[in-house]
Image: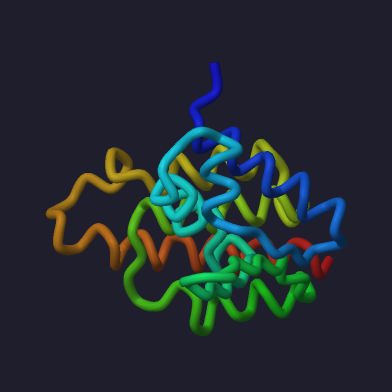
Length: 155
């Protein structure tokens, strides 16, 4: 059975598709609908709808407050160049790297096979060096893989 977070994520993504990429929600109404605490909605939004995953979130709290979710439709090459120049930086956590790979897969920039290989290469298990260096090495590996994607797609 799917976890509640997965169900909420899929519900929001379905609504986004139907609303052509922009959506306004009431946090409390969603919490009532899913019979959960509003913090569960916040958790899903912060972990599954970040800029690295291609979303912009705007939130206003209080009476009449809302959550606006906008799907960022950026040119594929612009997004890849952004990742290389700013998005990844010199360090990246495993979780953030996995989010980027998931977005690349969802956008069709990489195949499922490539996503699997990329995920395998950036895990903590694959990078068996002292903890303080893992995020730096992971950032370099991810940048190298994205550069290879750009090069391959330019052929």
